[in-house]
Length: 291
Image 1 (cartoon, helix red, strand yellow):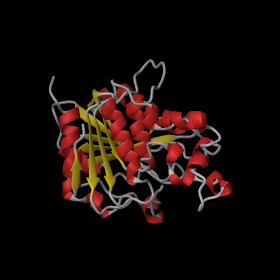
Image 2: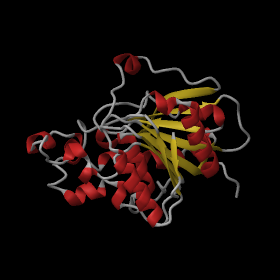
Image 3: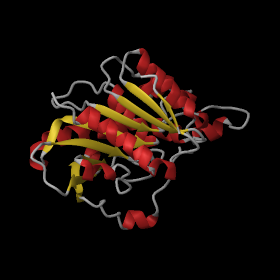
Image 4: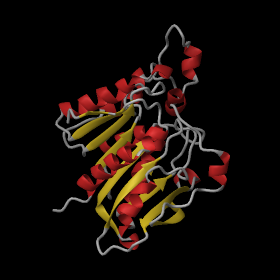
């Protein structure tokens, strides 16, 4: 495992997982299918994991954003649930997939989830000032944008205070499936997940692709970032995270890049005690800090 401290893609959940969501981890409870928004009549749900032991303090919140190439996946496969027994509320969310709506619906749904959590914080004992985002692959892409992209005028803020990005595409313009090459025709590019997300190939709508790429959205007021990426990832190249990390550092953001040696695009290496300990320590430092 290599630690770099310079301060799609995408697996499908099984049918069994979809029909029978996994139980919460020991030491946690779960409230499933809380509706947080209904854009254009589409009900979007949250599964809220809470520590089984009641706390006198308001709980910091980590929002889990699932992967699946923006076209598959669901909140049922929550890889952040291990944080709940450690004193966090974990909100695993659904968002509109590309068969329902195109960009920017996906990030707008993420913003709506943050606002809903703030508006309902008192009901669930949550700390509205300590909310982080965490996602993998396409979910990492969205989590990174939650920390960098300007949401525009809001009556309730959708800003987050920390982001953990697991191997998310940071620059849609240079993602291999979006680029014509000797091995990839325009027709193939037009069927890529990136094209499904944007409605056209990234080369045809470069400004929209930049709007949907965290690499081009960084600014000095972005929250702390932990970026984790497998050294052998052939779906989202490690170079995506290296460039994104450098862009964050260039504007003075508190950022760390953690390369999981030997890991591909997710997999068992990201369930290791070392990786989970790194994630837990990051959110404890950024969301549980006093003052």
